[in-house]
Image (cartoon, rainbow, N blue to C red; front, side):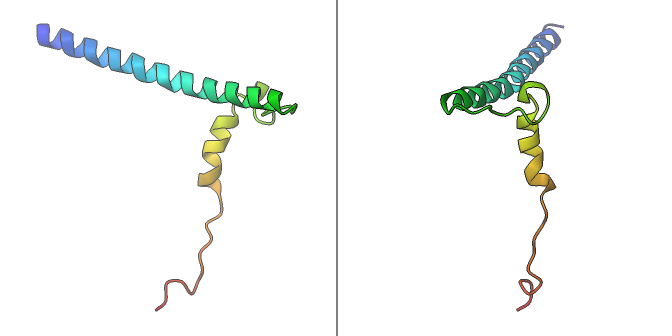
Length: 77
């Protein structure tokens, strides 16, 4: 019973740490963008979601949604 309790506690601690990081990083990216926008006297990331909160997710999706460009002659020898 002692091993199981320790294992559950370790998994819970890891889950809390990963959850904290997964919540903190997007907020810090948003804060950085807002501060840089203020430094440059711009409006900042406000195009995606309320207050630009979804901009980081849009930046992550954008490379996967891009068009694949292949040269037809590139595969021939």
